[in-house]
Image 1 (cartoon, rainbow, N blue to C red):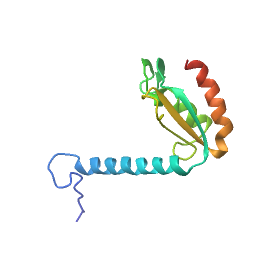
Image 2: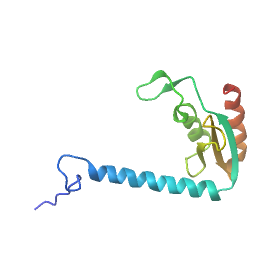
Image 3: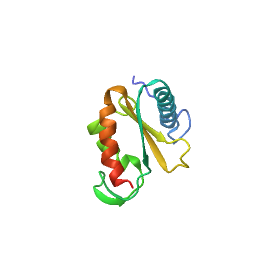
Image 4: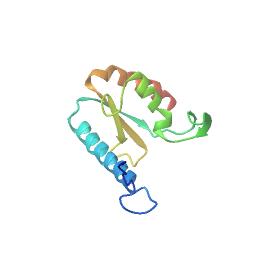
Length: 124
């Protein structure tokens, strides 16, 4: 006899259990990010919110995007490392939402300066 697991949380035809798991994951990431920003020592840089065309991976096409994930995340992951471990970002406080703050952990400070110089030029 096989065991059957109801992913719908008892409701018919939905994806309630999957949505609960995703919501829980987002809550955990939010808590982790809050802790990271409060206690991790390092360097914070500020850049204007990105605009302009970027090549997006899936499907690879040129799109007009203001998403920092499209503009900076590939370089951050390649140059610095993993988000929430080596770096994290948030909307810069007192910026009216037009700037983003990127925090680099203590061992990556020189990379923060390198990243700032690379993107500050392209960002003005």
